[in-house]
Image 1 (cartoon, rainbow, N blue to C red):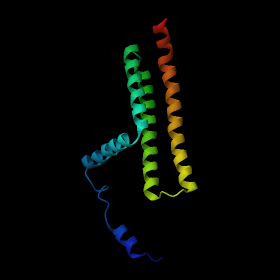
Image 2 (cartoon, rainbow, N blue to C red; image 1 turned 135 degrees about the vertical axis):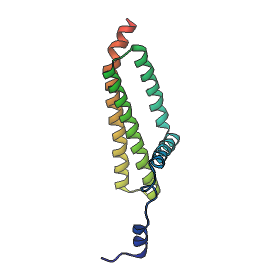
Image 3 (cartoon, helix red, strand yellow; image 1 turned 60 degrees about the vertical axis):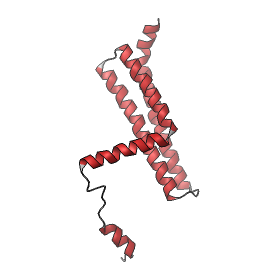
Image 4 (cartoon, rainbow, N blue to C red; image 1 turned 90 degrees about the vertical axis):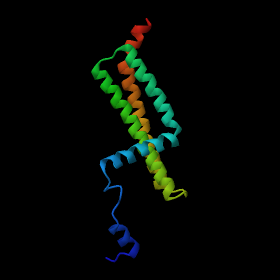
Amino acid sequence: MMHDETEIDEAAAPDPRRSGSWLQKFGNAFRGIKVAVRAEVSFFVHLFVTAIVLMTGLQLGISRLEWCLLVLSIAGVITAELCNTAIERLARAITQAEHQEIRDALDIASGAVLAASLSAAVVGVIVLGRPLLAMMS
């Protein structure tokens, strides 16, 4: 199979992101989080809800297991949102034209955020619901 010149040049060139130090890799990762938070308004909603959940958990004195459930749920939502944002940016970089496959991929990524958010809400109600009701009565 023949390769054209650009394919050979790209294949031969080492990816600087892969050969960097761990510090550089963490720097790239934190930069990615910063880019996503600045680019997506929905991150502010997630961070606002996260702050409320964490303050409520502190106020209610929940158990270690309950903290683990809340933190894992929050991490799941933020991770899904980061993946969704990455897919959105990549799709826009590839083309501005309408393609059904790209639209499907974007909708699937959004669905992942929705699934993570709904699951986290259920965990939040299970963990915080009863203690909140007890505190209010």
